[in-house]
Image 1 (spheres, rainbow, N blue to C red):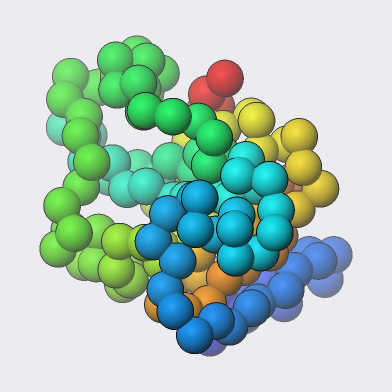
Image 2: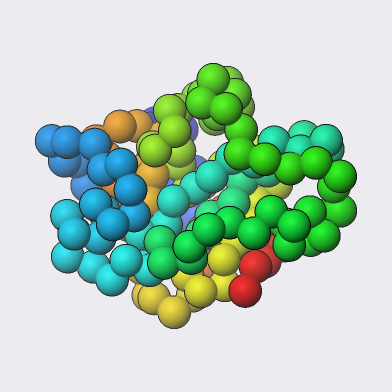
Length: 149
């Protein structure tokens, strides 16, 4: 998490909070219930494996099922699927369910629906912690290559 905090603090206008909790939050619904927020404010980061490498997809918790055919067209790939847990850990250094919202080294696709909220809540890269940050700062700190919705 030191790397994340360093990235956040190097940008002087980033307003964020890191929360610690006693149990892991395994889904957007669990996160929304725990923090008392709209499920759309829960922002899981998914790692996608394609024939052109890995991408991160940050979605609003109320997105539903990921439309892989839409993503294939968006990023111009032949094959796309969710990365396996071992691959996620190798690429991000964290386990599925706690992948950081900030991964500047991975091309990122953002869900526009996140911008409905002043703040969203998602992974820090460390279990039992959650990052509260504005979608605009997520956009600024990642290498965004496309948007869904």
